[in-house]
Length: 345
Image (cartoon, rainbow, N blue to C red; front, side, top):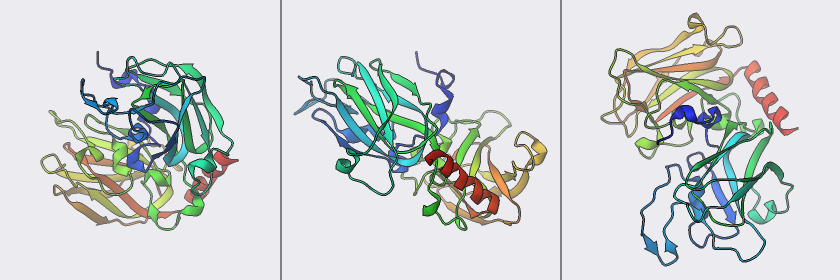
């Protein structure tokens, strides 16, 4: 039976900090004889074609090591594309049935700069998920309780086997020293923003709208199913901090027969009211016509402090990217800096 969204832990709706879409990479592995380590952070769901053999055996869309003949374990190091606080990890063993690891454990560390894999091996790693049994051909959900900011994750298979994907869900915590707090994308996940809700994510997650770079194809944006009623689809985002928005980029690139006809933006200041109060939301961009496969830029008034933004699309469809350029206010700068300090001390 197919797993429903309601069967998944709530933290899986948070962005995958390790995803290749956000710049995650697998830096090193003890072994990858049967299948490459890089597959661990692929954005798409694992695929499989039975009886597809290469020179090293059955081809797997995942990371698979040779059979160990000693008492050791296989490991891989992932550099997170979005350093942050980890809420939970999904160890996906899709299609690994007789060759999945019976146990896994996870460690993490936080380092500045860009250390090599060899340098990372000398670092102090913190155990965030002790050795525990997992099942084959399924998604294994592992909650993480640490409220600390991490930059790298090390997964260990005991003793060997294959993992299709490693999803590291959590909240991005940027380093304020690396940001221009007076001119930045307030909605970017890498700057500390967080998607807080949406009406529909049938085809793809709304988190994709706030990813770095341009979307290469439709699957790298947010797309809803077709509505058959009089309503419209929407998504909300908590900004990197309280700020004023000067420009909005509403990007429908790659969406040709499924772009929304119109879009609007509303803002709310959660420091003076509650986001649950419909009267607390004010207009940033009125309902505006959109063109398919187009990067639209709109000038906003930039005269009110905003902490949260609601995007409405009419009636349905999707966006490749949503950018909200502006500046953090003094309160926003304090919030962003405090978040970093509290998770690194």
